[in-house]
Image (cartoon, rainbow, N blue to C red; front, top):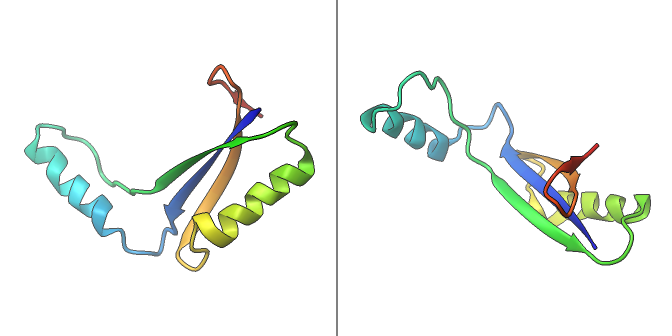
Length: 88
């Protein structure tokens, strides 16, 4: 069994009101020096069997059609080892 992580973030040109709210709250909580915050989503998928190139392409298609809105969001797919270390 393999674990695949899909990170979804708003495209740079898209306004991120949640990120701006976090950015405004940080100094009020005593955290200084942060100049920008972007908030996104993370999906962890457990994949049965061997993770082949075809299965990874299928995950890319999942990310493009369901997990993200490609008009306003970018996504990145990465494989994570079972011990938590990322695989390149």
